[in-house]
Image (cartoon, rainbow, N blue to C red; front, side, top):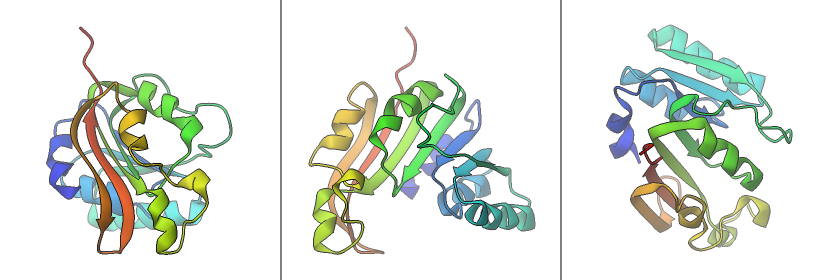
Length: 168
């Protein structure tokens, strides 16, 4: 999905790295000069991302937030792009969609139900059904979609690159 990272350059608002952990994906975008906010529930993980950004002088900040609290913590039209990797909380999807600005890019990759063959995660609450990621964002302009087994690390996943439609 790194091939889509340059599409974030020139975003008119910061890009949100959702459930960022230690910020690997957000740091990659920040190295391209994109303003990024990494959000996660783990203060320790965010401290790692913050430290790396500070050491490299990158345009990255962090936000500690529980995305699964039940109330959408994101403002409508707040974000110029979004990254979601290795995370699935289905009730949050409408919130994520609303939080993106029209024309904003979304990169989403997470595990499919076939991941159980390889180990964790194995809880179906965190695994996509075949075609589900495409269905969740069928109202977006899909630039790229694929499902399958990928390497580095070995995993079964679905990948999506999509734009929120512009207001007409």
